[in-house]
Image 1 (cartoon, one colour):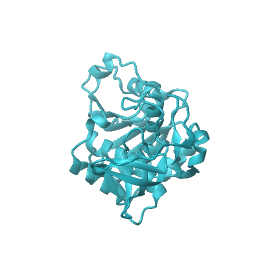
Image 2 (cartoon, rainbow, N blue to C red; image 1 turned 60 degrees about the horizontal axis):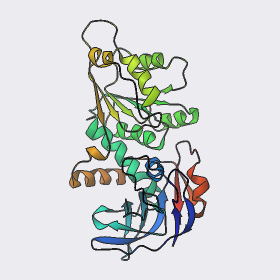
Image 3 (cartoon, helix red, strand yellow; image 1 turned 135 degrees about the horizontal axis):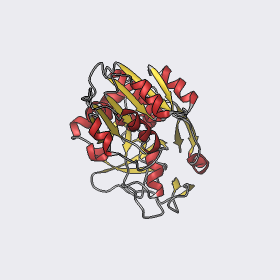
Image 4 (cartoon, rainbow, N blue to C red; image 1 turned 180 degrees about the vertical axis):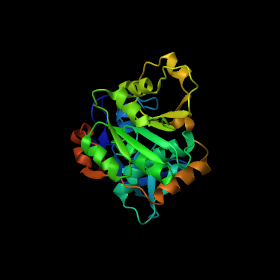
Length: 315
């Protein structure tokens, strides 16, 4: 079968042929129609993600949409290694299959479900966002960041502040519901965060960046007087597009009511709650910008900076 194939960790996959998968007990063979190129797929293919499969050659890809033998259209949320979603066929645990409604096309479903559920659950579960609260999204011009803007509004956020570097992306963030924006290339970024926070601060921060932008935010939140801190800020750490580590001065924690929690595979809830989250995202209310790319062009597409547009491979 045709497939994107990783031959060397850290190098883009190349288009080629790979042995067809054979489903085992409890597995289904999926005829893949669309597969999204995601950051986590790239990290796994580079061997830098904690869930990476390092035995090569292998087919990358977690997110995809395809059809079963009985004609049902399903979302592929991870295939059995070495068969990822970026191929004509994949084998998937039947418990991980999610039926896609007729009103959503293959490309949109492949692009939307994983980041949409991540955005929704980071706010609803890890942040415990309440109606009327103020939300700051670090990395709001990326695919998941833009979905987080929409999720925050759907969950009743009183104000959403979008922080990003790309001007066009920030304009799109405003179209999707952001009430104000922060340019991450501002000359005084801590000052920009401080001005946006104002006296009331942020109730929730969804952080897709980490690294220097997060350090600038923490500088802005750190108090210099001895009066009691105001309201609590919960920072939900989701991604590390700007760096894997930060410097965290103790004064930040002592002078604020800051809580830092993570959101990822370690915070996934039970099957029914996950099913409810997928159903909510599939139920509508989200927009995602996509571009289709032939599977044969995977090598060139892999390294493209799509600027908040999700590239989706079509076999």
